[in-house]
Image (cartoon, rainbow, N blue to C red; front, side, top):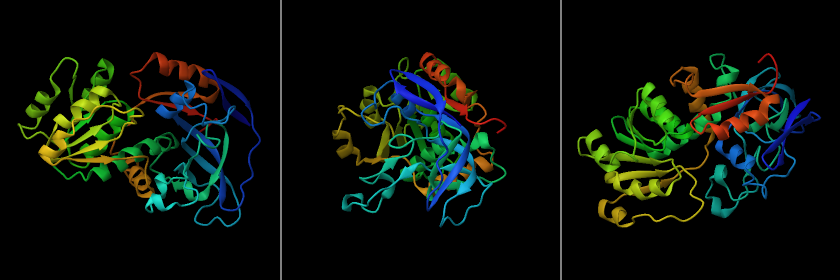
Length: 340
């Protein structure tokens, strides 16, 4: 079967891979589509070479059909269409506080283990979420990033009618905007890329460009001087970390979505002065996958404009090069098998 191997130096090579027979508690899938996320791009750029095992098949945003079940698997049958929640918790640790989805010994399928950019993928059956007939295989491959957005909005404690500001209108930022709006939030997006600004506006969102406009003033105008109930920091930028404390109202919440791998200055005085809360969010839990599938099944989110490109697995190298040359793109999908 075909598989795409990351071999380092911004290079993928197509090769053969033997299907892995599922063991106890496992299922083998025929992969339909696999999405490309920011983490995959970081791998492509060599930023995670110490973590992945080169050569390695990567990828974790996926949909597929069960073609073989190992012993002791219940609740699923061959032919089921599924999405994969690609987390392998590992041995629990006291520091986890019962949160296995971000546990100390967590492994991420498709990063720490072989992934979905291949025709066949064998995974633990507990990672599977059945797709209803109302969700296509193409839509199934974006369940994972939609689940990220559902998790982030859920942990924000969003209530209907609240004022929401999202710093960063990339793929996750735009999905958070969609989910927050669907749940009754009044959403303003801060974004600097002209193409992403245009797309967000096409989707009916209010957008401000903080390079050319004063973001705190724009938030004040948008909220009739009340400022934001919730600020999602999704940009990962120093500017985002600086401005995020200037936007909430008293007892507002700041939700840190982006990965800030290096320390950045944050104005702590405002946390004291306005009794603010900061909430860290990471990946998702099973209920977030269920919610994402429900939203997709109800066609509640405008995903037709969210998907930038669908290409065959054989074009993987070209697709990653396209992502590098088109930073305004949203979601790129690889079709891993024919006739999906």
